[in-house]
Image (tube, rainbow, N blue to C red; front, side, top):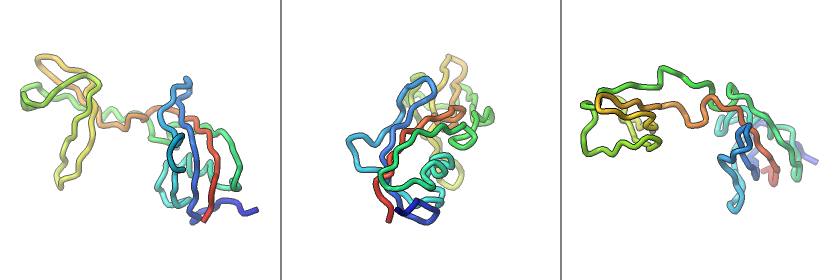
Length: 142
């Protein structure tokens, strides 16, 4: 039977959890994830985990944060003076805002802290610094 290799379009059902068992994503109830193996469309550890699987194979992989979304980058935690943010923008801890970079790129940020004097925003990926666990099932290779 054919093993999945770089360049193949693969279809994978998955369940992603943190190391404490908290789920963060799943294909349950949806179509399988379809991507080109080795193309960088998914995190490196996920790509590596699917490589070599055959249709029908199931396995659990552990992905260290370096092969997932990387460690938390403190340079991406930004402290703004409260007065720099327009009063009509809602600021709730845990809420998400969109920042616009020069050139128009939009970056989602999470509100970490709000006081009368400052607002702390975090532009790290929400899963940065986390080791991830995926249950995989390869359902197709094209």
